Image 1: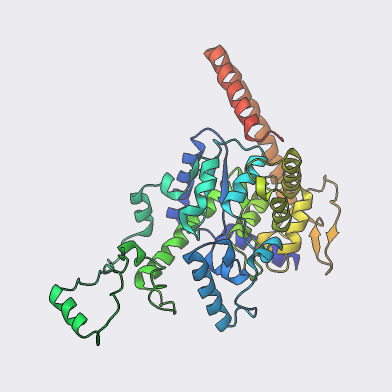
Image 2: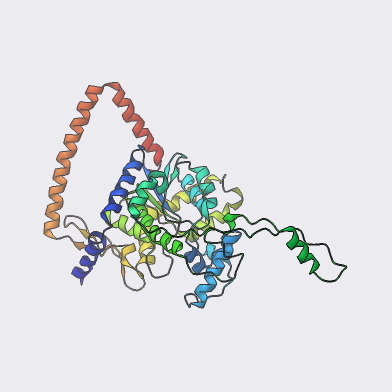
Length: 431
């Protein structure tokens, strides 16, 4: 059985790959982020309309977005996807950890962890429900908030999509203004006198209020079927998600706004966390407990931007625990019942015979959550040893090259190296 599981791991993390064009553009985007000369963090908000409707998080938004979530929730109830009531207490669900973290809250958490305002944050996800309005507080705290449109030109993105058949333009047409004779005729047909004063003129309907995916609310109570343009945009979002996936896996740090949604299928953040754990288990991947985070924010709700020092220490302690073994075990408890892709330990890992056995941690159902890795095959251990020796030789050669370069360049090189070290300390003071 263990051999079959290893085969599943090889297929999931090696055999299944993106198209070559997607991989090429994704690597170029990573190189452009690295060209800034400092580490970058990837953040996926997880604000998807279906997810918000499934968990009943409509009251966290305002205006038309709350109505859209409720429309979708009613549709899911009719389809049998949800067996709960239509109107629920969203704030209670948020306290239970069922709702995503808002971008403003994530910005405050990162600021409490000591990330400077010039930190590069890549915004992953093809669409953030609520629009750019929700990202205003995060942009105010971290000015270097970028996405795929900041790193790629329109030509590069269109080349990735390929040639498409042009669709007819679906532009909203304003009603034809009535002439003076038509207005008089309507007045004469209005009925016997005395009549009340005519109502004031209606507010002008602007084109942007009818265009897009929310224009149907003012016209009908039933959501229309997706148009060809909507279906095409959904296909494009799959490509954008693929690019964001590559960047999130390669990022120096990853912060999920929402994962383990309970639907039974791994979500974007869960897949990224599993891939990062499989490739580099030591990578900085935050696994926050949204229930604990909600309780912390309730404590300082009135002073969110000027919290007390004790609150900042509590946030640091919780997020640092999410990076450690305790966070891995908690993530395993949430992910194992659904899919091993979100937490491929210990199925997709092995240990070298020279290392000590890791203490096993089992869940309530007897499933191994942490530890109990199989011993690596002999060919893998020998390859690992050769790789280590080669790395040592290469690192020694690189060190010699650095020393020679430093001697040639003189004091200017030392100054630049010192500034780089200082910059790394500013990136994460807890290391």
